[in-house]
Image (cartoon, one colour):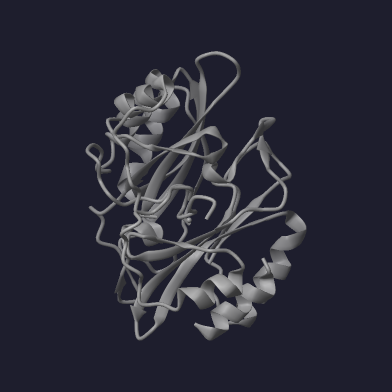
Length: 293
């Protein structure tokens, strides 16, 4: 843990509390279409977390909590002056779910912007499908719900858990999200004060995981639209306690091309695995790469 904190310091660089309620009309249309409410976040973003507690995933002998690396999420923001929204999201899927979910999305005009792994050696293997689309709120949400219906993703009810995007919390948590944790969430068995001091950003407890989100200094754009932190544009770092004050850690760094290899070297120098490197968007500015560790 000390080596990890030191590395994060050198780099310098959320159970969802779902409110079933009285949001704006476009938000209510999304909640109805998806069959699950979300929560309003800074930047005019409306986020819906879709954790996968149905998946029993282990990695190096440890069972992963949904909020550690198994959270699907969808983030919506109003687009233009009319009754239209843009959605970006990340869907956690098993290998047999990828093709049927993709087929339903493509048939209904939702773009696939990336499909990749986040983890190595996990059993069963999980894949992560990033999506992007725009349309009338209720219709778009219904399309997304129909696509998720081709998977075993639990939908419906005010289910606790989930941390869109990829664990990045509210201007705090993959992820690996922009949603505040419950105020009553117990502190994990970790020195969170030391974590906050090393990273320079206060985290939040998210489903038994300590999640930290670190936005970039610039605000990225995709297709000319600003992509707020709450839509997945921030660095995510998740700590799952393993006992004795230690933790397993995962997340992703959001990097420009010139930052990729220096960060790889800094992580590897402290024995931290780099598990994936890829894009999440197709027309982003600046061009950003997401490095999972």
